[in-house]
Amino acid sequence: MAKLLIIDDERAIRSTLREILEYENYEVDDIDNGIDGLELIKKNDYNLVLCDIKMNKMDGMEVLETALGIKPDLPFIMISGHGTVETAVEASKKGAFDFISKPPDLNRLLITVRNGLDRGSLVTETKVLKRKASKTRDILGNSDTIGKIKETIERVAPTEARVLITGANGSGKELVARWLHEKSNRADNQLIEVNCAAIPSELIESELFGHEKGSFTSAVKQRLGKFELANGGTLFLDEIGDMSMSAQAKVLRALQEHKITRVGGEKEIDVNVRIVAATNKDLLKEIEEGNFRMDLYHRLNVINIHVPHLTERTDDIPVIAQSFLEEICGEYGMPAKKITDGAMEALKRLPWTGNVRELRNMIERLIILSEKTITEQDVVVFANPGGGTNVGASHQSGNGSQNGGSFNYDGFSNFQEYKDFAEKEYIKFKLEKNNWNVSKTADDIDIQRSHLYSKIEKFGLKRAE
Image 1 (cartoon, rainbow, N blue to C red):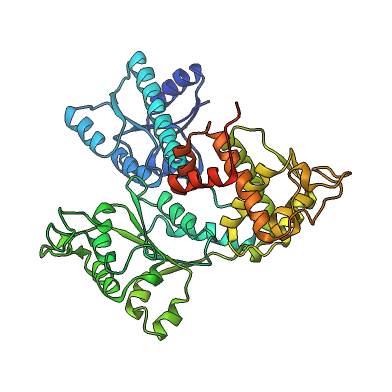
Image 2: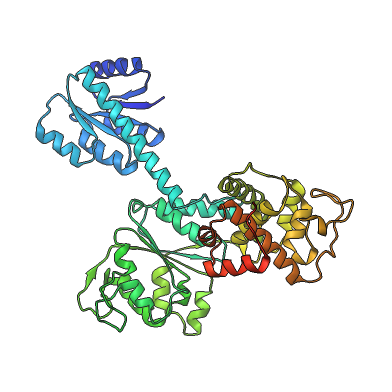
């Protein structure tokens, strides 16, 4: 049931609107002034507000502007007994969904309310779809450290403060950056990501600031850099500790002056970009060794968010593992497998050198190679390849079973033999999942198509007749 708020200083109007809207099965609150109305908007999740323009204490236009600053997607319908075209235009410019005159026509009122609610639903649905498309998953975990990270994101995201995210590889620094963008006032614009470690030092400046045609040998046309592409949005500089010193100097200038110059160009270009940076390095140590600028460090490190290693929050592993289990099974179009308490405890005991990224890969491996229930034995076998396997009759003892008997841990003569077996099973599963579309499978497992063909030939994989 949609929940509406009426803000009007005329009791008769409030009573009439309330009676009409409640008859249409809407839940309705009403208040006689804008100040108290704003308090109700802060406390409650209204789907739409009807607000008078001429009121005591606070003008309706001021209520509109203040409320949309708190909840930008809340549909407002402005009502007035002194309606003019100029007033309606002003209300629209300030973000009102529509404007109706007093006394309101019944049919016009109900249609406008219905359209306003539809618009609000579409805005919410669009944001959800954008989040799904960008694959921004929730930050999972109930530990104190994760709680503090979430609280910091909530406080910092709506500001323009620069953020430096630190933590080991695979710990989830990119996810923190994405949520900082999602919850910011820039969420409607782009989040542009740059992996500074993946770009050669001679190309990083062109990547960040763009270049003019002919500025160097391969510059056959003008190219916009990441700063320009992120204008109005957020620029995420991942692994910034690997950025060259010359690029650091230009980034520092861009942060100070909000201007950039393309490589080979002379024109200064204004940019409005929020910077979020991340690194797995100790930047203070890098500064001591002369690899990172101290002034840039202080520019970036306005707010620091440290993402802990997975082994520092092992109590979060069951929550994360269960989420990955449901997500991956959904991607494969299969019922979610069950995982035993013993298996969860076994997962918590692992070293997790690759952090959350390694945990996701582990869960995918268990889903592929285990039966309907993932047991502690499965975790032991597939987390420690030297321990053998529980897939395939040739590697099981006579009285063994997938979910609990004895296993022949000598089923493989060496580590390489196990790795080949696991790789073969994984590729076979992916090919069958993609109906033996080699190109799609290569993209799916992130290897070159020619490499995948070589693997298919090596393992003698053939499509079932």
